Length: 122
Image 1 (cartoon, rainbow, N blue to C red):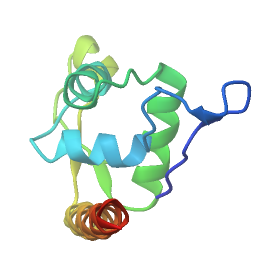
Image 2: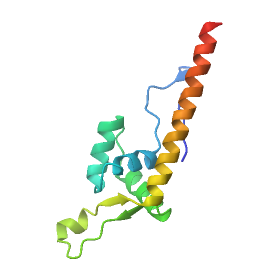
Image 3: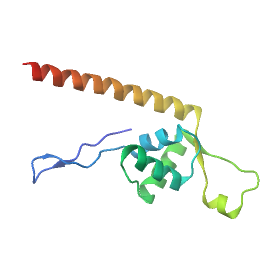
């Protein structure tokens, strides 16, 4: 997973755009249970304020599935509507990957906040 800070050279400052990793947001959404693509987009927008476009969403879903972090929920007799709305769920590997990444983010946040506090104190 990766994170990108966006820099606005014209304004010489960080932009107000929310930086995000689609994979992390999708895994976080699926931690609450299986969801299909549209439900993931809606959940991500609600939890992070980021709207994933269909290309971003389905590209990230394909990468996460290739890594074995998510899998489609298999229905023994899917209706045409259910075939279009294929839900995904976290695998055990995905659960572990999400937990490890969130713990790394907690550590990074602690270090960053500590450094800010030290800088303010001097």
